[in-house]
Image (cartoon, rainbow, N blue to C red):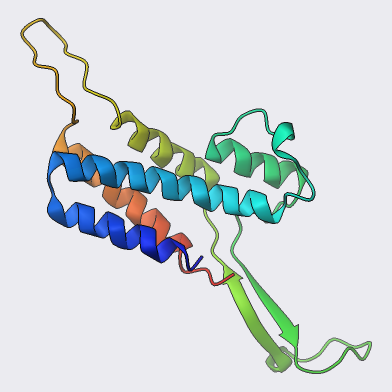
Length: 162
């Protein structure tokens, strides 16, 4: 997923800023990138399942539906290769294949957990008492840890070349 490089680079830049505002935008950028990973897989299977068939739009639900209804390998790591020689009726030796690309696999359940956790930082913090100030940003340390977890997940997916 070559397009993912732009997203991870921007998340890195926001993390290096380190301000609560930049970290919040990094969480938003990470959440959007996770959605795009899932929706790219949906787009590839769109001839088999329509958006109307998807009752829930959350990324984990989209991937799980694709796994159940279209392709059990939607979230699996796989390699696409082609034989160097024309079809002859017998399988060619392993060294006679040329790799066209790889799909990086991922755990849909983990993706959903990260996506939900990032979303929890995209809201103003509710005060716990009348003395508690209202803050537009969550705890910077917790937020940075979760964004870094999302970034690690996205870096694993961006290794794919398909």
